Length: 116
Length: 113
Image (cartoon, rainbow over all chains, first blue to last red; front, side):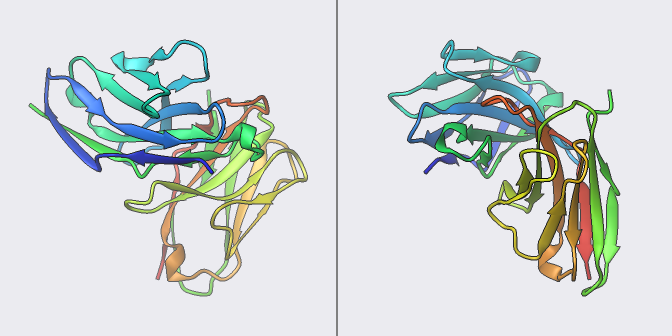
């Protein structure tokens, strides 16, 4: 069965410093992986997705993530944090090929705070 | 560019009352989903639909019913609301092809007193 573990529930960085949000997954198949962002009182917005093409995936707003099969990780990074990046981030695995017709399995979220 | 629209945005109910949450999408997506979001729990799937006239149970279906009479609409019903159903509810939709991202509405905040 697929699962996702976000290793930090809360990350705090200073504006202009790098961001690292960690995610490990478990999957019986070649997974599809996503990162979503949720700003306060808003729905979830897709940041980026990995679907077995390039292992380094670039997303919106300067974020990127690297798929490492040997480490079963899909960490999200950004070189320089901006105040507007403060939000909650969800790592998500799709078990489409496990027969669940595209259902997503969500991590519990990492809340990113950005200090001025 | 409406995308996924949820109605209402906020609602307060008394225990035992019933209500229906409406989700509408204008992207011609085949798949639609209802999730609930609780603090520290991420999103949990309640029910989903792979096409008009079909529905299926997700991870936490008890106490909820759904209907997909039209391709663009997915309704979530609470027949007898309980305080444990206080949550933020999100609707999402996606294309049928494998591993397509889901598009989310802005949520419905529901409080059961």
